[in-house]
Length: 459
Image (cartoon, rainbow, N blue to C red; front, side, top):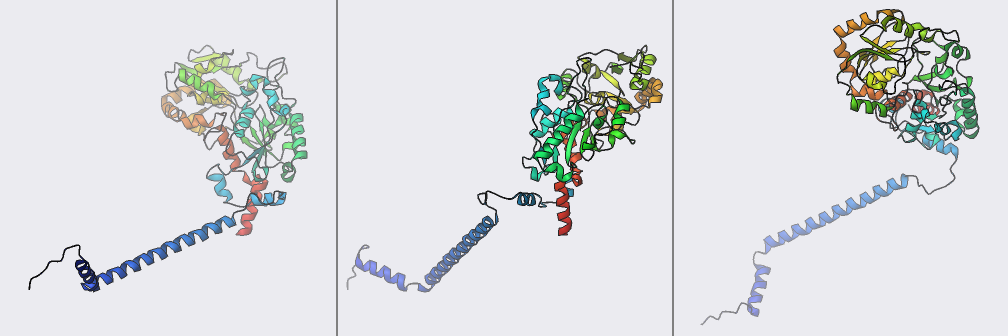
Protein backbone atom coordinates (compact mmCIF):
# COMPACT_ATOMS: atom_id res chain seq x y z
CA UNK A 1 0.00 0.00 0.00
CA UNK A 2 1.31 3.35 -0.94
CA UNK A 3 2.04 5.83 1.82
CA UNK A 4 0.65 9.34 1.45
CA UNK A 5 2.47 12.19 3.24
CA UNK A 6 0.19 14.60 4.96
CA UNK A 7 0.97 18.22 4.17
CA UNK A 8 2.40 20.05 7.16
CA UNK A 9 -0.49 22.49 7.30
CA UNK A 10 -3.17 19.81 6.94
CA UNK A 11 -5.75 18.94 9.59
CA UNK A 12 -4.23 15.51 10.09
CA UNK A 13 -0.91 17.02 11.07
CA UNK A 14 -2.64 19.41 13.45
CA UNK A 15 -4.58 16.59 15.15
CA UNK A 16 -1.45 14.55 15.42
CA UNK A 17 0.38 17.41 17.12
CA UNK A 18 -2.50 17.98 19.49
CA UNK A 19 -2.49 14.33 20.44
CA UNK A 20 1.22 14.42 20.98
CA UNK A 21 0.81 17.34 23.41
CA UNK A 22 -1.98 15.53 25.15
CA UNK A 23 -0.48 12.08 25.39
CA UNK A 24 3.25 12.38 24.59
CA UNK A 25 5.34 12.99 27.76
CA UNK A 26 2.32 14.21 29.72
CA UNK A 27 3.64 13.72 33.21
CA UNK A 28 6.65 16.07 33.04
CA UNK A 29 4.76 19.12 31.72
CA UNK A 30 1.95 18.69 34.15
CA UNK A 31 4.37 18.86 37.06
CA UNK A 32 6.02 21.95 35.59
CA UNK A 33 2.70 23.76 35.14
CA UNK A 34 1.67 23.00 38.70
CA UNK A 35 4.96 24.40 40.00
CA UNK A 36 4.54 27.74 38.13
CA UNK A 37 0.95 28.10 39.28
CA UNK A 38 1.98 27.51 42.88
CA UNK A 39 4.93 29.94 42.61
CA UNK A 40 2.79 32.75 41.11
CA UNK A 41 0.14 32.27 43.77
CA UNK A 42 2.71 32.43 46.58
CA UNK A 43 4.34 35.57 45.11
CA UNK A 44 0.99 37.32 44.77
CA UNK A 45 0.05 36.49 48.35
CA UNK A 46 3.39 37.76 49.72
CA UNK A 47 3.18 41.06 47.86
CA UNK A 48 -0.41 41.58 48.96
CA UNK A 49 0.50 41.05 52.62
CA UNK A 50 3.50 43.41 52.32
CA UNK A 51 1.53 46.32 50.86
CA UNK A 52 -1.38 45.79 53.23
CA UNK A 53 0.78 45.85 56.38
CA UNK A 54 2.76 48.89 55.09
CA UNK A 55 -0.52 50.73 54.62
CA UNK A 56 -1.65 49.89 58.17
CA UNK A 57 1.65 51.04 59.75
CA UNK A 58 1.70 54.30 57.78
CA UNK A 59 -1.90 55.09 58.66
CA UNK A 60 -1.27 54.36 62.32
CA UNK A 61 1.69 56.78 62.51
CA UNK A 62 -0.23 59.59 60.86
CA UNK A 63 -3.06 59.07 63.27
CA UNK A 64 -0.70 59.55 66.22
CA UNK A 65 0.68 62.88 64.97
CA UNK A 66 -1.19 65.94 66.21
CA UNK A 67 -2.98 67.82 63.50
CA UNK A 68 -1.96 71.43 62.96
CA UNK A 69 -5.46 72.27 61.89
CA UNK A 70 -7.20 71.21 65.06
CA UNK A 71 -8.45 73.57 67.74
CA UNK A 72 -6.95 76.95 66.91
CA UNK A 73 -7.36 78.18 70.52
CA UNK A 74 -4.93 76.13 72.62
CA UNK A 75 -4.44 77.02 76.26
CA UNK A 76 -1.13 78.51 77.41
CA UNK A 77 -0.77 75.71 79.93
CA UNK A 78 -0.93 73.11 77.20
CA UNK A 79 1.66 74.93 75.09
CA UNK A 80 3.98 75.16 78.06
CA UNK A 81 3.49 71.50 78.90
CA UNK A 82 4.23 70.39 75.35
CA UNK A 83 7.33 72.53 75.12
CA UNK A 84 8.80 71.23 78.35
CA UNK A 85 8.51 67.56 77.39
CA UNK A 86 11.94 65.97 77.95
CA UNK A 87 13.13 64.96 74.49
CA UNK A 88 16.58 64.17 75.91
CA UNK A 89 18.56 64.63 79.09
CA UNK A 90 19.74 68.00 80.35
CA UNK A 91 23.29 66.73 80.40
CA UNK A 92 23.32 65.85 76.72
CA UNK A 93 21.62 69.14 75.83
CA UNK A 94 24.24 71.10 77.70
CA UNK A 95 27.42 69.28 76.76
CA UNK A 96 27.08 67.64 73.36
CA UNK A 97 26.11 70.63 71.20
CA UNK A 98 24.25 73.92 71.13
CA UNK A 99 21.60 72.92 68.61
CA UNK A 100 19.06 72.17 71.35
CA UNK A 101 19.67 75.37 73.34
CA UNK A 102 16.87 77.90 72.85
CA UNK A 103 17.18 81.65 73.46
CA UNK A 104 14.33 84.14 73.18
CA UNK A 105 15.42 87.68 72.26
CA UNK A 106 13.09 90.39 73.55
CA UNK A 107 11.94 92.85 70.90
CA UNK A 108 12.29 96.00 73.00
CA UNK A 109 11.44 99.49 71.74
CA UNK A 110 14.40 101.02 69.83
CA UNK A 111 15.15 103.56 72.56
CA UNK A 112 16.75 100.68 74.49
CA UNK A 113 19.09 99.59 71.71
CA UNK A 114 19.00 100.41 67.99
CA UNK A 115 18.40 104.15 68.44
CA UNK A 116 21.94 104.34 69.86
CA UNK A 117 23.37 103.03 66.59
CA UNK A 118 22.95 106.46 64.99
CA UNK A 119 26.47 107.00 66.32
CA UNK A 120 28.76 104.64 64.38
CA UNK A 121 31.11 104.30 67.34
CA UNK A 122 28.42 102.37 69.20
CA UNK A 123 29.05 99.19 67.21
CA UNK A 124 32.83 99.53 66.85
CA UNK A 125 34.23 100.57 70.23
CA UNK A 126 35.76 98.22 72.83
CA UNK A 127 32.40 97.99 74.70
CA UNK A 128 30.47 96.97 71.57
CA UNK A 129 30.05 93.32 72.54
CA UNK A 130 26.56 94.30 73.75
CA UNK A 131 25.71 95.17 70.13
CA UNK A 132 27.60 92.26 68.55
CA UNK A 133 25.99 89.58 70.74
CA UNK A 134 22.52 91.00 70.08
CA UNK A 135 23.06 91.02 66.32
CA UNK A 136 24.50 87.52 66.26
CA UNK A 137 21.61 86.08 68.29
CA UNK A 138 19.01 87.57 65.94
CA UNK A 139 20.17 85.28 63.12
CA UNK A 140 21.37 82.37 65.24
CA UNK A 141 19.97 78.85 65.07
CA UNK A 142 19.50 78.91 68.85
CA UNK A 143 17.02 81.75 68.62
CA UNK A 144 13.40 80.80 69.20
CA UNK A 145 10.35 82.93 68.47
CA UNK A 146 8.32 80.89 70.95
CA UNK A 147 9.15 82.12 74.47
CA UNK A 148 7.52 79.04 76.00
CA UNK A 149 10.26 76.81 74.59
CA UNK A 150 13.13 79.15 75.56
CA UNK A 151 15.85 78.18 78.01
CA UNK A 152 17.07 81.77 78.35
CA UNK A 153 15.81 85.28 77.60
CA UNK A 154 18.19 87.88 76.18
CA UNK A 155 17.50 91.50 77.17
CA UNK A 156 19.11 93.77 74.54
CA UNK A 157 19.82 97.06 76.32
CA UNK A 158 22.78 99.11 75.04
CA UNK A 159 24.23 101.14 77.91
CA UNK A 160 27.72 101.92 76.56
CA UNK A 161 26.81 104.18 73.64
CA UNK A 162 26.10 107.43 75.46
CA UNK A 163 29.36 109.21 74.59
CA UNK A 164 30.43 112.20 76.65
CA UNK A 165 30.54 115.51 74.82
CA UNK A 166 33.44 116.53 77.06
CA UNK A 167 36.00 113.75 76.56
CA UNK A 168 34.29 111.45 74.02
CA UNK A 169 34.33 108.46 76.37
CA UNK A 170 31.18 106.42 77.06
CA UNK A 171 29.18 107.82 79.96
CA UNK A 172 27.18 105.12 81.73
CA UNK A 173 25.42 107.12 84.43
CA UNK A 174 22.10 106.33 82.73
CA UNK A 175 22.66 102.57 82.71
CA UNK A 176 20.79 101.63 85.90
CA UNK A 177 17.67 103.62 85.06
CA UNK A 178 17.62 102.34 81.45
CA UNK A 179 17.87 98.71 82.53
CA UNK A 180 15.26 99.19 85.28
CA UNK A 181 12.90 100.70 82.71
CA UNK A 182 13.42 97.75 80.35
CA UNK A 183 12.74 95.21 83.13
CA UNK A 184 9.58 97.04 84.21
CA UNK A 185 8.37 96.96 80.62
CA UNK A 186 9.00 93.29 79.92
CA UNK A 187 7.75 92.16 83.33
CA UNK A 188 4.45 93.94 82.71
CA UNK A 189 3.99 92.62 79.17
CA UNK A 190 5.39 89.08 79.53
CA UNK A 191 5.08 86.46 82.30
CA UNK A 192 8.63 85.14 81.96
CA UNK A 193 10.55 87.54 84.21
CA UNK A 194 8.10 87.15 87.09
CA UNK A 195 7.89 83.34 86.94
CA UNK A 196 11.68 82.91 87.41
CA UNK A 197 12.40 86.27 89.10
CA UNK A 198 14.81 86.92 86.23
CA UNK A 199 17.09 83.92 86.87
CA UNK A 200 17.02 82.87 83.20
CA UNK A 201 17.37 86.40 81.82
CA UNK A 202 20.67 87.52 80.29
CA UNK A 203 22.17 91.02 80.19
CA UNK A 204 25.45 92.39 78.83
CA UNK A 205 27.65 94.71 80.92
CA UNK A 206 30.70 95.25 78.74
CA UNK A 207 32.37 98.17 80.53
CA UNK A 208 35.00 98.71 83.21
CA UNK A 209 33.43 97.15 86.30
CA UNK A 210 30.67 95.20 84.61
CA UNK A 211 27.33 95.01 86.36
CA UNK A 212 28.28 97.72 88.88
CA UNK A 213 27.93 100.25 86.04
CA UNK A 214 30.64 102.73 86.96
CA UNK A 215 34.08 103.48 85.55
CA UNK A 216 35.77 104.06 88.92
CA UNK A 217 36.23 101.07 91.19
CA UNK A 218 35.55 102.70 94.55
CA UNK A 219 32.22 104.13 93.31
CA UNK A 220 31.37 100.85 91.57
CA UNK A 221 32.03 98.89 94.76
CA UNK A 222 29.93 101.29 96.82
CA UNK A 223 26.99 101.05 94.40
CA UNK A 224 27.23 97.29 93.80
CA UNK A 225 25.10 95.31 91.35
CA UNK A 226 21.60 96.80 90.87
CA UNK A 227 19.11 94.86 92.96
CA UNK A 228 16.86 94.28 89.94
CA UNK A 229 19.67 92.28 88.22
CA UNK A 230 21.05 90.30 91.14
CA UNK A 231 19.14 87.15 90.27
CA UNK A 232 19.97 87.30 86.54
CA UNK A 233 22.95 86.29 84.37
CA UNK A 234 25.37 89.02 83.28
CA UNK A 235 27.88 88.74 80.43
CA UNK A 236 30.63 91.08 81.57
CA UNK A 237 34.20 91.96 80.66
CA UNK A 238 35.13 92.45 84.32
CA UNK A 239 36.39 89.40 86.16
CA UNK A 240 38.80 88.73 89.02
CA UNK A 241 39.78 85.56 90.84
CA UNK A 242 38.99 86.99 94.29
CA UNK A 243 35.72 88.05 95.87
CA UNK A 244 34.48 91.36 94.52
CA UNK A 245 31.13 93.19 94.87
CA UNK A 246 30.85 93.59 91.09
CA UNK A 247 30.85 89.80 90.72
CA UNK A 248 28.05 89.12 93.19
CA UNK A 249 25.78 87.99 90.39
CA UNK A 250 25.73 84.92 88.15
CA UNK A 251 28.04 85.94 85.32
CA UNK A 252 30.16 84.90 82.36
CA UNK A 253 33.44 86.71 81.69
CA UNK A 254 33.59 87.77 78.05
CA UNK A 255 36.32 89.44 75.99
CA UNK A 256 36.14 93.12 75.02
CA UNK A 257 35.07 93.82 71.46
CA UNK A 258 37.64 94.00 68.70
CA UNK A 259 36.42 94.24 65.13
CA UNK A 260 37.07 90.96 63.29
CA UNK A 261 37.14 92.92 60.04
CA UNK A 262 39.96 95.17 61.27
CA UNK A 263 41.92 92.10 62.40
CA UNK A 264 41.42 90.45 59.03
CA UNK A 265 42.56 93.56 57.18
CA UNK A 266 45.70 93.78 59.33
CA UNK A 267 46.49 90.09 58.84
CA UNK A 268 46.25 90.41 55.06
CA UNK A 269 48.95 93.08 55.16
CA UNK A 270 50.98 91.61 58.03
CA UNK A 271 50.76 87.80 58.33
CA UNK A 272 50.65 86.45 61.90
CA UNK A 273 53.82 84.40 61.39
CA UNK A 274 55.61 87.16 59.47
CA UNK A 275 58.70 89.15 60.46
CA UNK A 276 58.56 90.83 63.89
CA UNK A 277 61.00 93.68 64.35
CA UNK A 278 59.57 95.16 67.57
CA UNK A 279 60.58 93.28 70.70
CA UNK A 280 58.25 94.85 73.31
CA UNK A 281 55.32 97.06 72.33
CA UNK A 282 52.78 99.30 74.05
CA UNK A 283 50.73 102.20 72.75
CA UNK A 284 48.17 103.88 74.97
CA UNK A 285 47.57 106.09 77.95
CA UNK A 286 50.66 106.36 80.17
CA UNK A 287 50.43 109.16 82.72
CA UNK A 288 53.63 110.99 83.54
CA UNK A 289 52.00 111.84 86.87
CA UNK A 290 49.61 108.98 87.67
CA UNK A 291 47.44 110.85 90.15
CA UNK A 292 44.70 112.50 88.11
CA UNK A 293 42.49 115.47 89.00
CA UNK A 294 40.12 113.21 90.97
CA UNK A 295 42.98 112.23 93.26
CA UNK A 296 43.00 108.64 92.01
CA UNK A 297 46.03 106.79 90.66
CA UNK A 298 45.47 105.60 87.13
CA UNK A 299 46.52 102.00 86.45
CA UNK A 300 47.71 101.74 90.07
CA UNK A 301 50.83 103.59 88.81
CA UNK A 302 51.82 100.56 86.67
CA UNK A 303 51.79 102.35 83.30
CA UNK A 304 53.71 105.30 84.72
CA UNK A 305 56.37 102.93 86.07
CA UNK A 306 56.70 101.27 82.65
CA UNK A 307 57.19 104.61 80.96
CA UNK A 308 59.73 105.87 83.49
CA UNK A 309 61.73 102.63 83.53
CA UNK A 310 61.78 101.61 79.86
CA UNK A 311 61.11 104.69 77.74
CA UNK A 312 64.82 104.99 76.97
CA UNK A 313 65.31 101.27 76.35
CA UNK A 314 65.68 100.58 72.62
CA UNK A 315 64.12 97.13 73.04
CA UNK A 316 60.85 98.76 74.14
CA UNK A 317 58.65 100.60 71.65
CA UNK A 318 56.41 102.73 73.90
CA UNK A 319 53.98 105.34 72.54
CA UNK A 320 51.60 107.53 74.55
CA UNK A 321 49.52 108.87 71.67
CA UNK A 322 46.82 107.21 69.60
CA UNK A 323 47.49 105.95 66.08
CA UNK A 324 44.72 104.61 63.82
CA UNK A 325 46.93 101.87 62.36
CA UNK A 326 48.38 100.65 65.62
CA UNK A 327 47.23 97.07 64.96
CA UNK A 328 49.95 96.88 62.31
CA UNK A 329 52.44 97.64 65.10
CA UNK A 330 51.04 94.74 67.15
CA UNK A 331 51.50 92.43 64.14
CA UNK A 332 55.19 93.46 64.05
CA UNK A 333 55.79 92.84 67.77
CA UNK A 334 57.02 89.82 69.75
CA UNK A 335 55.66 90.87 73.16
CA UNK A 336 52.66 93.17 73.71
CA UNK A 337 52.17 94.73 77.13
CA UNK A 338 48.62 94.46 78.53
CA UNK A 339 48.67 96.44 81.79
CA UNK A 340 45.53 97.32 83.71
CA UNK A 341 43.85 100.69 83.24
CA UNK A 342 41.05 101.73 85.57
CA UNK A 343 39.87 98.09 85.34
CA UNK A 344 42.03 94.97 85.05
CA UNK A 345 40.98 93.99 81.52
CA UNK A 346 42.05 95.60 78.25
CA UNK A 347 41.23 95.23 74.53
CA UNK A 348 44.97 94.66 74.00
CA UNK A 349 44.45 91.11 75.32
CA UNK A 350 42.28 90.27 72.32
CA UNK A 351 44.25 92.30 69.78
CA UNK A 352 47.53 90.66 70.84
CA UNK A 353 46.17 87.13 70.58
CA UNK A 354 44.39 87.83 67.30
CA UNK A 355 47.55 89.24 65.72
CA UNK A 356 50.05 86.73 67.09
CA UNK A 357 51.85 88.93 69.63
CA UNK A 358 52.51 87.29 73.00
CA UNK A 359 50.34 89.12 75.59
CA UNK A 360 52.15 90.20 78.74
CA UNK A 361 49.37 90.45 81.31
CA UNK A 362 50.06 92.93 84.12
CA UNK A 363 46.88 92.98 86.23
CA UNK A 364 46.94 91.14 89.54
CA UNK A 365 44.04 88.75 90.05
CA UNK A 366 42.47 89.20 86.62
CA UNK A 367 40.13 86.43 85.47
CA UNK A 368 40.49 85.97 81.73
CA UNK A 369 37.61 85.00 79.41
CA UNK A 370 36.65 81.52 78.18
CA UNK A 371 39.19 79.47 80.13
CA UNK A 372 37.89 76.21 78.66
CA UNK A 373 38.53 77.39 75.09
CA UNK A 374 41.61 79.60 75.50
CA UNK A 375 44.62 78.11 77.31
CA UNK A 376 45.90 81.43 78.58
CA UNK A 377 48.79 79.90 80.53
CA UNK A 378 50.13 78.43 77.27
CA UNK A 379 49.83 81.58 75.11
CA UNK A 380 50.66 84.48 77.45
CA UNK A 381 53.06 85.73 80.11
CA UNK A 382 51.81 87.00 83.48
CA UNK A 383 53.89 89.55 85.37
CA UNK A 384 52.94 90.71 88.86
CA UNK A 385 52.34 94.45 89.24
CA UNK A 386 55.12 94.68 91.81
CA UNK A 387 57.60 93.12 89.32
CA UNK A 388 56.97 95.57 86.48
CA UNK A 389 60.44 97.07 86.98
CA UNK A 390 61.93 93.66 86.04
CA UNK A 391 60.05 93.37 82.73
CA UNK A 392 63.15 93.31 80.54
CA UNK A 393 64.79 90.58 82.63
CA UNK A 394 61.61 88.44 82.69
CA UNK A 395 60.99 88.70 78.93
CA UNK A 396 64.66 87.99 78.09
CA UNK A 397 64.38 84.76 80.06
CA UNK A 398 61.18 83.78 78.20
CA UNK A 399 62.80 84.55 74.84
CA UNK A 400 65.73 82.30 75.75
CA UNK A 401 63.60 79.36 76.88
CA UNK A 402 60.04 78.72 75.67
CA UNK A 403 59.11 81.61 73.36
CA UNK A 404 58.80 79.42 70.24
CA UNK A 405 56.41 77.06 72.05
CA UNK A 406 54.25 79.95 73.24
CA UNK A 407 54.11 81.38 69.72
CA UNK A 408 53.08 78.04 68.21
CA UNK A 409 50.22 77.80 70.71
CA UNK A 410 49.28 81.42 70.12
CA UNK A 411 49.03 81.04 66.34
CA UNK A 412 46.33 78.37 66.58
CA UNK A 413 43.36 79.81 64.59
CA UNK A 414 40.87 78.32 67.09
CA UNK A 415 42.32 80.51 69.85
CA UNK A 416 41.90 83.66 67.78
CA UNK A 417 38.36 82.66 66.78
CA UNK A 418 37.26 82.19 70.40
CA UNK A 419 37.91 85.85 71.25
CA UNK A 420 36.25 87.57 68.30
CA UNK A 421 32.56 88.44 67.99
CA UNK A 422 31.20 87.99 64.46
CA UNK A 423 28.01 89.46 63.00
CA UNK A 424 26.65 85.90 62.77
CA UNK A 425 27.44 83.09 65.18
CA UNK A 426 30.23 80.82 63.96
CA UNK A 427 31.17 77.62 65.71
CA UNK A 428 33.89 78.36 68.24
CA UNK A 429 33.68 82.17 68.07
CA UNK A 430 33.04 84.47 71.04
CA UNK A 431 29.23 84.41 70.85
CA UNK A 432 29.37 80.61 70.47
CA UNK A 433 31.50 80.48 73.65
CA UNK A 434 28.87 82.59 75.43
CA UNK A 435 26.15 80.15 74.37
CA UNK A 436 28.21 77.20 75.51
CA UNK A 437 28.66 78.86 78.90
CA UNK A 438 24.89 79.39 79.11
CA UNK A 439 24.26 75.73 78.23
CA UNK A 440 26.12 74.87 81.43
CA UNK A 441 23.69 77.00 83.46
CA UNK A 442 20.46 75.26 82.46
CA UNK A 443 19.63 74.73 86.13
CA UNK A 444 18.82 78.47 86.23
CA UNK A 445 16.32 78.14 83.42
CA UNK A 446 12.64 77.88 84.34
CA UNK A 447 12.07 75.53 81.42
CA UNK A 448 15.26 73.62 82.21
CA UNK A 449 14.25 73.10 85.83
CA UNK A 450 10.85 71.79 84.71
CA UNK A 451 12.57 69.31 82.37
CA UNK A 452 14.87 68.24 85.19
CA UNK A 453 11.94 67.70 87.57
CA UNK A 454 10.09 65.74 84.89
CA UNK A 455 13.15 63.51 84.36
CA UNK A 456 13.40 62.90 88.11
CA UNK A 457 9.70 62.04 88.23
CA UNK A 458 10.00 59.64 85.27
CA UNK A 459 12.90 57.81 86.85
